[in-house]
Structures are given as C-alpha cells and as structure tokens.
Image 1 (cartoon, rainbow, N blue to C red):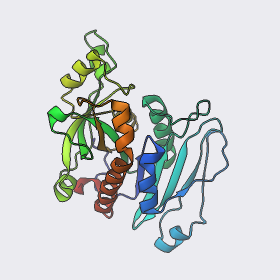
Image 2: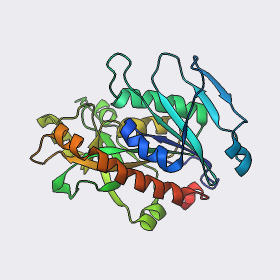
Image 3: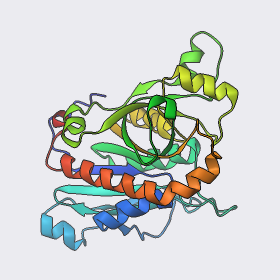
Length: 277
C-alpha cells in the first residue's frame, strides 16, 4: 500500500495483539506503560508530561480516551526514535474472556488509527499452521497475502468482496535482514476448521490461519495506513491433536518467540522510512 509518505521517517507505530498473553512480552520488552486516562466518549487529549518525551525530544504521546463502555486496552512508550502504541481488545465485560475475532479487532484498531495516525501498523499474533505447507510449531512468519475463508458469498462480484484478498505492505529489506519466513494467511472467526472452511483455506493457499488478520488488513487499507503482519505458529490445523488443547499447551512459548521477532522488527524499523523497509 503506497501512502504518499514513503520517504518520511517512521515515528509512530501502532501494534495490535488479540490476546493479553500475546501483548505481554512486547509490553515488557519495550517497557510500555498503560494509558490511565479516564474513560469518556470519543475525546482525545495529549499529554506533555512524559519525561521520555522531553528526554528524546519526541512528540507528546496521546492519551486515547476510549468510550466508557468498551474494555479496550492501550500501552504506550518510546524506543529510540519511535513512539510505540500497543492495543488489544481486552476482556468481554459480560463473560470475562478475551474479546477475540474480527469484530473487536477491527473496532479498536479503527479507533486507534483515527486517534493516533500511525505511520505503520503491525499485527502481532499467534496462528494455526499447516504441516503440509511446511509450518512448524513456534515458526514466526511475515505475512504477504491475506484473505477470509468464512465469508462465502457465491455471487459473481460479491464473492471477491467476501474473500477480501489484500496484500501487506512490502518489506523486502526487512525480510532479507531478519531472514524472515514469508507466507499467506487466511482469517475466520472460528477456532476449529469445518470441511467447507478447509476448502476455502486451501484455495487461499494459506500456510497459517488466524481470527483477525484479514479484517485488520481491511481496516488499515480503509484508513490508508501501511500494515505488516507477524504470525507465530502455536498449533497445527492439520495435525493429530485437538486444536484447543495444542494451542493452550504451546501458547506461552509461542508468544515468547513472537515477542522476540517483533522486537527485532521494531529495531530494524527505527530510523527508517517506509521505502527503506
């Protein structure tokens, strides 16, 4: 996605993680702090009191005052010349579990992009992988192409909208420097895989599957923000184990691997413009 600002040095990153467990290693590595703004509807204020802001002569961070009814979470901080914002949807207020899936991911990302106007958006998360496509547990991929597998609209024209095929922002230098594996991603709102979903996933030529990527690609495209997607394999979708059990078993080690790659990616991005990625 070309934005017209490809030669401007990247200064503001927005990172989305679906789960608090995915967010934690990134928060810890960059020593991000929670946004403690009082929650009020649709008001955005800036703070000029950050000592890091004064130290590095960076723009002040913005305190996003999300609508009072939402559980969305934001952490923020500075690393070298970068302002880093990490968001995740938080826990469902009625059920007390992580708000996973395309809808909460899209909503919090839209609101955050609108408020923060980042130079680059990063989706960092776990994913299921296909053995048959060469994925291994704890592999970390940079995604090149994204599509949905559960928005089936069998009408010529709308069928393409349902698939929602998009490409991530091209980063050949990043891939080469960090020796990253590259793959295609398919997104759906279910953790299991029905026979019909499997047919669509295979048609998407996906190596990994998740529950938010293609939706976030839509939001970033809509808002004209370049986006990259980093996915770590926590479980197989074509293996012999139960998907929920394998996901739970491997989650802790997977998010550590994910966090390490995200840290390396941010290190590479620092001081560069989009055209250098």
